[in-house]
Length: 172
Image 1: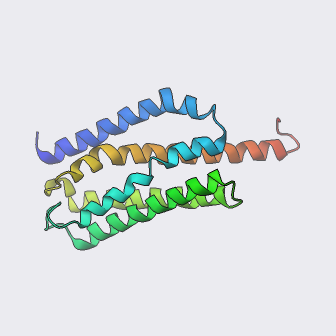
Image 2: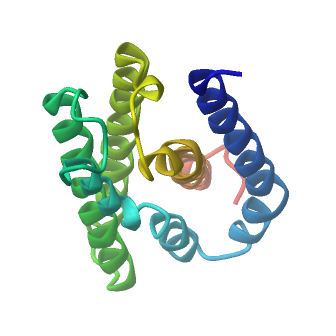
C-alpha cells in the first residue's frame, strides 16, 4: 500500500472510530448536560488547533508544499482555536452573545476544515513529507470534524426545541 492510500485509510478509520465513540458514548453523555456545558466540552476539542501553526515551522513539512496552502491552514486553525476559547469564556460567563458566537465559530471552523480538505485533495498533500503533521491530518482532523457535527447538532436541536416550545402547537 502506498503512502497516499495509507493516509486516506488512516483518516477514514479515525473518522469511523470517532464517529462511533461520539454516537455510542459522547452524545448520550452530552445530552444529559445543560447545553452550555455540552458546548464547552465540544469546543475544547477545537482549542488545540493552534498546533496547526506547526505548518509554518521551517523543516517540519516538505518545503515543496505551497506557502499559500500552509499559511491558510495554519492561520485558519489559529483563528479557530482563539474563537473556540472565546466561546468557552463567553458560555461560562453567560454572555448574551455566547450562542451566536458559537454559531459563528463552528461555521468558521467547519468551513476552514473543508477548505483544508480541498487543499489536501487538490495538492495531493499525502504525497509530500508531512513529518508529525501526518498525525494531525489522520487523527486530530477527523476528531475535529466529528466535534463540529456534534456542535451543529446541539445548536440545531436547541433551536428546534425553542421553536417548538414557543409555537402554539408545540409541546412543552
